Length: 176
Length: 113
Image (cartoon, rainbow over all chains, first blue to last red; front, top):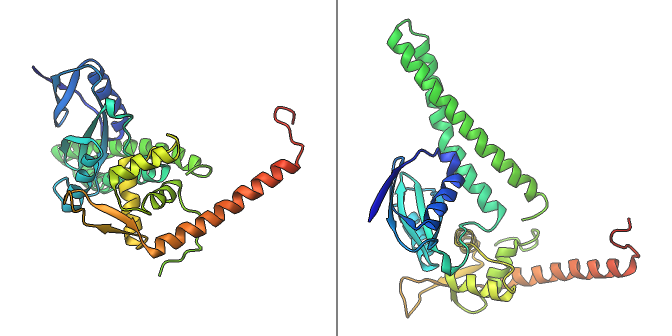
């Protein structure tokens, strides 16, 4: 039987999202499809899968991504679904622990990719927000406030990812 | 040509190069490294993929066609990679020898500093 759950996770909470998907799997709900804020599960053996999310460098259909996903598949990793460049992976727990990255450099690189996804949109929102606010028209002001709010949200997200990155970088001074 | 004297290799790269003395595919490298290190080093697939691509770019490893499975690519170390591996072993030996000789000479005792 399939079950759909609507839940909101921001892109900077991807590790919380992974944890939640693992908790669902522990209860016997296995992710089989993803949409925007929408997760479809099918019932199965509790704890069968562990999950990881990755923001790919390219779209999932790009040849480089296809080659990467194929490589992961050869190691027992399965792609469950994707939203834009975000890809949802899972691996059978009987095949051992699942991680996409085993060194600090790859983790830092992944976080950088997320920040660079936010920055241009943030810049766009702030400039659109300010230019709309400067107009003496209530609907423009409304759009302005809306755009500024999205900009602030992304600024907060970038800050959260930046903090995670700083923590890894400190470790990087000692370990690899 | 790549510079062979530039610093330390990462643990992942060192073990990947060691695994590729004989041709091997991605998953085989992961298993080999885990076995070599008695389960201590578990290369994650994403990290391994990135490392292999960097090594291919540097021409330290090459991709071979797998005759039994055209989808699974085999990789093997090149002469350049072999030289890098050897210079790393020498560097590690220096680290190891210095560590041992200094630790043996000193009277430092744990919990007593």
